Image 1 (cartoon, rainbow, N blue to C red):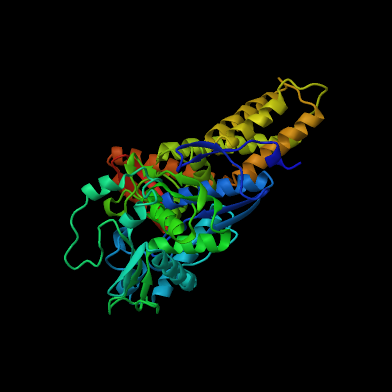
Image 2 (image 1 turned 90 degrees about the vertical axis):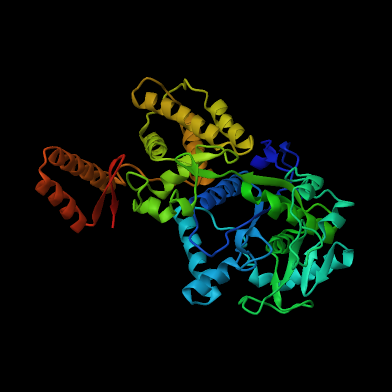
Length: 494
C-alpha cells in the first residue's frame, strides 16, 4: 500500500480560501505547474523561497508515492517592465544596456538560477520549458480565444476582452477582486492606447521597430503577452485541467487571474483544481528591494560578501531557516534568526548521526509510532514544515536522553526512529548532512577572525591605531575584509 493511501493530505486552496482534502485527478499521479523565473537578473532570495517551498511540496508528494510531473517554466520573453502591457521587455532592456544579444542575457541568468537551486539542493523539475520555445502554442491559443469572442485585434495587437469575459465568467475569483471595483478605480485610457478598457490585457503585442525580440504571427511581427506563456505550457504538458498550480503571492493578480481567464476562454473549463501561493521574504523587517539596498543575493549570503550579515551562512542553513516558517506566512530574514537556525540545524544533524551508536534495550519509553505519525500529520496539514521541525526537535530531546543513558529504546523502534528522521530531514526537506565537524575549518576561521576583531577593537580603544590597522591590513592580504558599521565589525571572504 502506498503512503498516500494511508495519509490524508490537506492543501490550502487560494481559490476556495480554505484547506481541502487533496484528491488528484488521476489516481496515484499528480500534475503540478509552478511559475518560474524571468531570467534578466540574478535570482534573489525572495524568489528562492518560493521555489524551495514548492521543492518541499514536490518532495513530499514523491515521498508519499505519487508519480509527479512537475513543470516549472523559464520566462525568456514577453515580460515587460512593471508587469505591464507597455514598455520595454526586461530581457531586451538588459541586452540593450550591455550591448549583447537577448539570448546571452537569458543564458547567463538561467545558469545562475540553476547554480543557486543546486546549491540549495532543490530537485530539478520534470520539465522546464521556455516561453520562446512555445511561441506556436501561444499563437494557437490566441486564435482560439479570438474565435470564442473573448478577444479583439487592434493595429496588429490582440487583447483579452475582460468585460466580455466577465459577462458569463467570474474574472477576479482567485484574487477576490470585483471587476466593478476595478473599473471604478482605474484611470481612463491614454488616447494612443489600443485597448477598449483599462482592464483588458495583451495576448499578442505588435513589436515596435526598436523591439529586438519578435516573431511572425497572423496579426503582426510581435511577441506574446506575459500571461499567455504559462497557459500554453501548463496545458501542453499537464492537460486542460490539472492538479496544482503554484507561484509567489505577488503573482495572484494579475498573472494567475489572467491565466484562469485565458484557459477558461479557450478550453471551457477551470484549468487548475488547487492554487497555491508562497508568501514573501523580508529583510530586517522591510521588503527586499535592490533600489533601497535592503537586499541580499544568494551568493552574497553564502560568501559573507555583504553589509547586512555578520558572517557567511551555508545554503543548507538558509534552507532550514526558510522551512522554520510556513510557506504561506511572511518570513523575516535577519542575522540573529539565521544564527539561531544554524545552531538548531547542527543540533538536529548531531542527534541523527548519534543514532548509529545508540545501545538497544528491551523497552522503549517514547511512543515512536505516535511520534512518526505526528511528523506526517504536520506535512499533511498544508505542508506545515515548522511543525514538522518541532517534532524532529522532540525526537532530538529523546535521542539526547538515550545518549545520557536516561532513556531506553528497542531495536525495532530505533530502526523506525532512524528511518523516519532520515526520510523527513533528507528526502522530504532535502537537507544535506553537514555537521559541525564537516564545517570545522569554516567554524574555526570564524572564531579566529572574531578573536582578531576583538583584539583590534581593544587596540582602537587604547588608541593603538598602528596595531589596529595592522590587523585589518594583514587580514585583507589573507582575503578577509573587515567592515566597520554602526552595529559593530563584520567580515567577508574575498
